[in-house]
Length: 635
Image 1 (cartoon, rainbow, N blue to C red):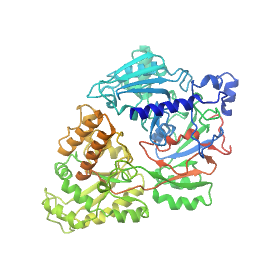
Image 2 (cartoon, rainbow, N blue to C red):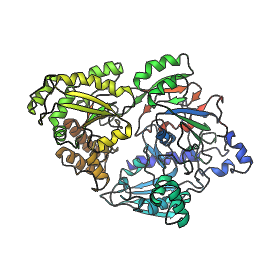
Image 3 (cartoon, rainbow, N blue to C red):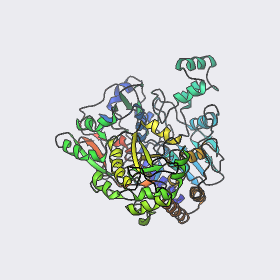
C-alpha cells in the first residue's frame, strides 16, 4: 500500500513538472491585472502548479461562462467545497489518493506523514499559504479548549493520543504517531475534509491570543455571540463556506453574503491548478447557485435553469427529464452509484423507549423485518428493475464482494415465525401484533422528507409488513430535525441511503460498518461515545457490535492487505448476520443533467459522496463552455 501511494505521488509530481511555462490568464481578470489590483498570473501561481490533464476525450478548454446549479437549501453553499474539491490530497477517478494542494507527501510506516507545500502558494486574497497556517490550527484552534473543547479531531487520535506535529520550515509539516494511522490521508481527501490548516492572517483578528482586546469585545457584541471563541468559530467556517471574507484555496470563492436565494461564486485568482496548455483553472469564471424548494428542482431543471445538476434529482425523474431534453438544450445522463444500498432502514439500537430498544436489539426482530420486505417489487415498481436487490453491503465491483452476504430473500412465513417466537402472537382487530407492553406493533419510520422516493418505497414496504402483523407509519421531517431525533433516540427507525462506499478494497477503512460515528443512524449514541472519548453517548454493550469495534482496531494496525482483507470479510459477515441495517436495492442509476454546450463532463461516471465528492473527483474546474453566451462579468 505504501509503495502504491509513493508511486502515485511520484507520477503526480512528474506530471506537474512537465508543464508549459507560458501561462494563460482569464480575460475576466484582465482589468484587475492591468490596474495593478492583481499581479500577473505567473506571480499568482505556486511553483510548480498542479497540471490537470486527464487526456482521452477530455480536451483542454477555454475560459469564460457562468455555471448554473440549483440547491434545495441555503446551507448547501457548502456543496461548492464538495464540488470544488481542492484538498491537500484527493482521490482520482480510480479512487486512488494523490497530492493536490500539496506538492508531495512522504509516508513512512503509515505513521509518519511529511507534507510538502508548493512554493509561492497563496490564499484567495493573495496572502502566503505556509506551514504557519498549519501551526496556527494546531496550536491555537485544535488545542485551544475554548475553541475546541473536545481537543483535536478523532481522526488524529491513535489509541486516544494525538500526533507529534512539527514545522521544519515554511513549506514542510510533519505528523508522527507511535502507531499506524491509516485514516489520516482518507480524512484529508474526504468530501467534508479534515482541515488541518487555517488562514491564520485572517483569523487572528478573532483570537484572544492575537487580537486587540477592545476590538475583539466590540466584534463579540456586534455579532451577538457569547464570547470570542464563538465569534472565531462563526468566522472560521471552511466547510460550511458561508463567510465571504474567509480566504479559501477552492477554485471558486463565495461572493454573496448570506442570507440569499441566489449565491454567486467567483474564480479564485490564486488557484493552484492549470491545464496542459498553461491556462489557469477554473475555466468557468463564475458559479451561480440558486436556492429552491427541493421538490421544485426537477421542474426548474426541465425549464433549462441549470447547466449541471444531479442534486435534487432522483431516478423517478429520469423519464420526465429525458422527454424534456428533446426540446431543451441539455442532455440527461445516467451515472452509476456506489452506495451499499440506494435506501436502507435503520432500526435505532439506542432508542430511548425501553420496549423499542429491546425489540430493535433483538436480531430476530431485525431479521423478520428484512424478510418481510419484497425487494423485487420495490426494484420493479420504483426502479424499473434496473437496481440490484439485497442487503446494505459492498457491491460486485469490490474485491471484498461476497454474493452470499448481499442476497436477501422475501419470506413472509419465516418472518411471521420469528415474530411469533419472540412472543408477539396476539393481534388486534386490524391484524397488528401486540408488543410485550401490550401496545400495537406500530413503527414510525422518520424520513428527511426531501423527495418522494423514500415515501414511495415505504408505501410498498407498508403492505408486506402488514402481512407480518407490523404497521408502518411514515413521518417526514426537516433534515436537521430528522437527524437530531435519531441522535437523541427519539426515533425508533429511519430511512436513509446505505453505506456510502460500496466499492472498498482491503486498504479502505471499514468504519462505515463499525459503531464509531454518531452519523450511523443504527447506533448513534455508541458512535457519539467514541467520537467524544466517552464524554457523551453510550458505551457499546452489544456483543456483535463490540466484536466489530475490536476487528476495526485490528484492521488499523494490520501491516498487509491480506490481513486487512481477512478482517474486512469478518466485519461484513457480522454485519450481514446481524442485519444491523435493512438494505433494499442498490446500483440505482443517478440522473445527471448537463447543458449541451458544457464540455468535459464525463458521459459515464460514479456519483457518490465518499469517496467521490459527487462531481468533485471529475474536477468541475475543468468543465468549460463551448460558447460564451453567459460569460461572467464583475458580480
